[in-house]
Length: 214
Ligand code: PCA
Image (cartoon, rainbow, N blue to C red; front, side):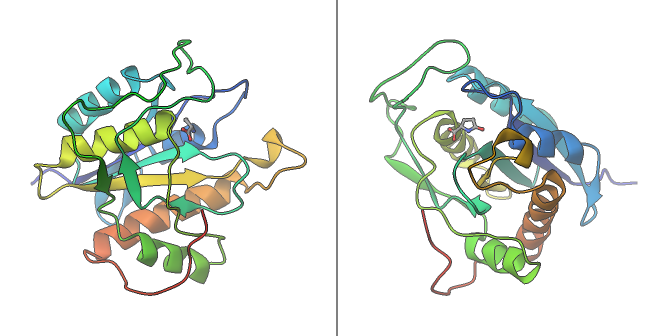
């Protein structure tokens, strides 16, 4: 029997004084699941510049996934937001979980200024909305550890034509906040399942206006 193809989903450990990170919870919940005839490996990355990308590279090389979706928490956002582009800069507003706070540093010294997501981001937004889940394309993943991992992922995948990947930011969980927007874990998990299924089905993105916010 041929080995089942794989999908890698990563999230992050809590950071910035939080006790939870929805992205890590989703990755843990999806670990071992079979979706669209692919086995999902879910893993939690440290919220640490450098170390997060070392661990991600190790996972990509070990799992050899055909699809990689990295997740992160974007507190304050009300929608599930597939990111359009990763940029080659670390510029931290707060220290990471190891106390590092890089300012205006390149992620890859001779790397390009940016990489596009290779996920069908607008098709994902459309699929989520069809299922009643708030979703929007985001134009920036920021300049903290999430953008760092998104850029690191696309740099690692740049020569692997078969593997596609990208990044999706998710809102807070209801347990994390009383005043900010949030979504239940089950809804966000469903959103990521739909994003995986849509990405596997749809090689090229939809070309349609609308759906952008951030
Ligand atoms: N969100 C942070 C880093 C880890 C996470 O979940 C970010 O948006 O950069």
